[in-house]
Length: 256
Image 1 (cartoon, one colour):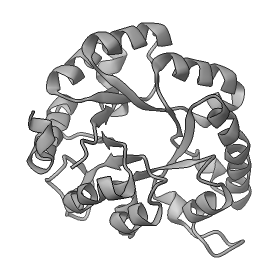
Image 2: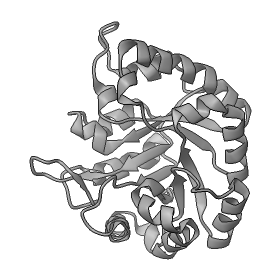
Image 3: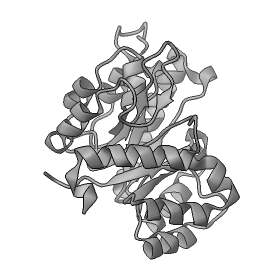
Image 4: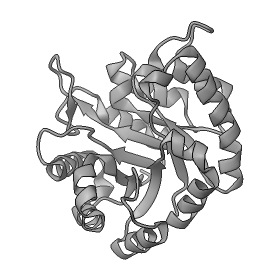
């Protein structure tokens, strides 16, 4: 079995990051995570954080960068991620007012223009889904997400599939990962409670078939597993610890 590293999306720990970003990174390393996916640098410079990552033995898997930031200064975004040693720049979220036919077409045009620029710099652009991208476009009868990946080639845009949001939209995460085999280097591992609330849950405690997803990772070319829990009912560090302990029961190499 190929040893796919496990990282944490720092949005899960955002309150800790706001208080003391460096100490939060140290604690992530102490828990045994291989690295992080960024959601901002909390006022620190890319070089400072790169030095801290190196000191703590953490890798920068990827980074969620707001669309407005990419549009405002793409060259700075690229330069920062080169310094961080972070290969994947991820478009993380679309504002509600932009979730229209016109808004999605504008998004696709931007991603199509931006992808080659990012690739030319030696990095990769990726798109992270929620559930609203599974809505059908009136113009072609396909979902927004399918349209994004059909219009934009894999050489310009990679997929960061979020299995919680796929399942919440009534989709089968494993089928999506198989469909975009070789194009899904990053997968967000998330679980969902089995009650009516369908809330975010620690891995292994809900109804998402995490093990089926893990079993496909090597076959489809996943490079990073990302643990994220948008909202935690307990201390977020406890939540990501529970999730990592679950993964240790399914991925033996994590116990080394």
